[in-house]
Amino acid sequence: MPFDTILTPVEARDLPLRLLAHLGDSVFELFEREREVLNAPTAKRLHQRVVDRVNATSQAAILLELMPHLTPQEEDIVRRGRNLKVTGSARRSNQGAYRHATALEALLGYLYLTDKARLGELLDLTLAEATAE
Image 1 (cartoon, rainbow, N blue to C red):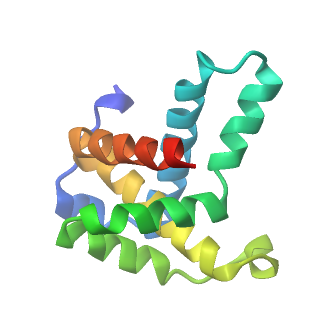
Image 2 (cartoon, rainbow, N blue to C red):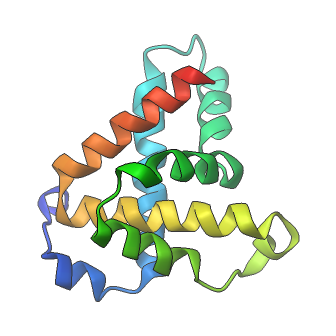
């Protein structure tokens, strides 16, 4: 079953960072949708609340809040993700925010594949940041 996939840290680090970021983007969006599904009065409001957190600017801010809590291995994934070349429409937007958002997504994808308990810990920390807004 795909949801049970667990890789070693070495296997996950060998995957292209863009693939980890793509997976991490989906993980974060699903986390946000699940979090909001019981709170939003309508599907439109749910969508708006999710979009407010699942965008480059918000994800960059979330990453900065998480940085003090990361292990050296996690910091390495973030560093590598932040250094990915900016492509497509991101060239016209805030490149710094986009790079940080991609780094967060790569980290979440990496943790999804290697350590779901740690992924849950970090996602829970994002909730503290969300309630402080």
